[in-house]
Length: 65
Image (cartoon, rainbow, N blue to C red; front, side):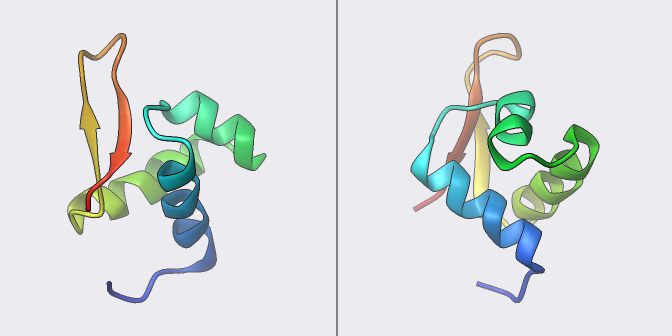
């Protein structure tokens, strides 16, 4: 895995521990603004570390194994 800042690592670990959550729930769980979480999730998605599964209304993020 490439080097990430601490926030990106926190999001990745949180998604691994709580699969299926969406941005607002991740933001609340980490006590970080949603816009910041969106940016960090984007970095993880671009690197193939997490993916969104399901429909836009009911889906969530999952760590890629």
